[in-house]
Every structure is written in C-alpha cells, then in structure tokens.
Length: 452
Image (tube, rainbow, N blue to C red):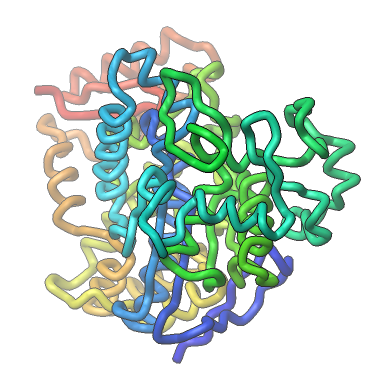
C-alpha cells in the first residue's frame, strides 16, 4: 500500500498518515456559506480536497473513504442578503447551493460522500446527536454557561485552548478583536447559542428560541457523520483561528477526547494578479466569472501549479499556460483509457499532495510517449478531454490567426495598457478584431472569442 505523508497543522510537521481504520478513512472539510456566489479563492480548498479524496480512494478503495463537506445555511449574512433581495432564506440558500454545485462540478470535482446542511443538525430526533445536545453536554461538563439568553463556551475551562493556532490564552486576549459583551466571563469566550429576533430563523432550545453559533455547526455535523474522532479535517488557512480552534475546543470538551481530528490540513491564500482579492480593488472574481471564459479543467490545472500550502497568484498568464499545457497533454494521450494514475504521479501526490512534482511527472509521461498511462492519469485527476475539445473547437479562429499569435498580441496589449499606452492597446485590439477575434476584458482578466 502506498505510504502517504501529509503536513499536519497541529504538529507542524509532515507526518506519515495512518488512518484510524484503513477500511473506513474519514475526512471533513468546511464548505460554503450559501449567501452569494463562491469566489475563486473558495475554489481552492474545493479542488485541493477533491484531489486528496481521489488519492485516498485510490490508496484505500472507493468504498472505504468517507468525505463530508458541509453547507452552512444559517448565518447573519444569509439573513441580511435574503432581506435585501426580498426572498425567503430557504429560497436564497437553495439557489446559492445549486449554483455552488454547478460551479464545482464544472471544475471537475467529485461530489462528497455526504453534504449536510447545518439546519438539518440543529434539532434532531431522540438519540441522534445534534447542536442542542452538544451544547447541553458542554454545560453539564462545566465548559459552557448560559448568560443573557446566550450560551457561551468558557475558554478558561480548557487549558489546551490555542494548541492549533500555537497561541496562549494570554496572547490571544492581548490581541483580541472580539466583542466584549457584559455577559461574558472572559473576552475569548465564544457563542454556542444565541437568541433570534422575531424576523430571524429560530429553533426551540432549553435556552429559548434561537440559533447556533457558527463554530458549533461543524462540531455537530462531523461528529454525527464521522464520529467523535476522525482522520482528516481540512479547510483554508484563514480558518485555523478562530473557527478550527473553536471546533477542537467544543468537540474535545464535549466528548472527553484529546483531539477532534488526527490530521489538520490547510491550504494557502489566493491572490489575483499579485493583489489581495477584494471588491474595492475591482479584482473580485467568482468561479462563475472564470467559467464564463475558461473551461473548468483549465482553472483546475492552474490551481495545481502551486503547492496547496503555499500562496497562489491567480493570473491570466497562469490560465494561458494551463491551457497550452492541458492541450499538449490531451493531444498526446490515448483515447478511452481507464482512469488510473501512473505510479510516479501517485508518489508525487503521496508526498503531501506535491502537485508541482505531479505536473513534472505528467510532462515526463508525455515525453516518453506513454499515451495510455497519460490518458489514465488525466482521467484520474479529473481532467475531461471532451470538455476541453468542445471549448477549443468553439474558440478556433475562423480567419486563420494562429492561437499562439492571438496570445502574443493579447500579452502585448496587456503590457501596453500597463504602460498606459492606450493608443497601442486599441491598435492591437482592432488588429485582432480584423482577424476575427473579439476581446473581453473582465475581472478575471482578458479573454477572447471568435467573432460571430
């Protein structure tokens, strides 16, 4: 059996992965809060953990791996957006979840084994673990308290709090930017349950009509579906604190365990053209924006260009390079091969999902003429030749301009605009238009299509 090594944020080391039960490997990843379209930064953990899911299924067997990714459908942002649009909360969350599923499917991602909605795990039947029961148990064990209609986790009751973030309670309190409410015992205490206003979603509880805190949701859903302790917990690096730290606090104090998950994996941040993505900078790019100009397979390969733990710079050039590379791979691959990775690719992925090394291995396969192995590897990784070919055929220039020349002219135009030489940029645009190529400037960069 292939030996996997994964970088564990809890130990700060790349450790050999040893599942609790090789016949039942269990992974939980924090999913979307469904109030708006997912942005390209949200796509990174989806793609990263889809790749890990595929690798685990290859190593341990498809039927022996469970992958749970939740949907948060109760949240203040959801309430505000539904009110702003004049629709019900359920209409908003259903619509947004549907869009998310369409987007990530277009990125070549498999559906998780289970995809629970938070609202389904607030109050369940007798004998079934839910958020209310988890809070009750925390109160009974002396780790939570009721105050002013709220229930809060008593951080001081947990000496190991801060282990994941590698910060002491004193350090966290000194730098805290949290609400210091009068009913809190300590400034770092966080909400497990809070009262709802008349126009907000609410569920019955021993503490009155209300709704759960954000951190509580993942503790309840992961425990209900994967057990009190499971193998892998994943998410973006921005979730280490406070979200994942608070999940660990809730779960370990509730169940009396030393840990919640044995391995914690976190992917790095994403920038757009070297800058932090934000609406104020005009570089906020949704997955749907990218898919309007590029097939999901190209975006998927571009995301693999950097190691998952490192920051990634999302650029037009990276998409163009991914397009060229994927086209070369598909052109060299055999048809109809069974999705199965080449041994060198498995070795690369087994080394903490080393995708740059994986890409080098695929280049080697192509150079050595391994057409069948190349095709099987691409299929295993989620790349679809039919999707790529349909897109490439639709973009084929009718006026005979070679694709390389189109891309050279686009690069020259981008450089001219960067130098504020707008006359030259307009000249290049007109030259391309005369050649039957229409440019589209958008948040995701400059793309092109054949004039209709």
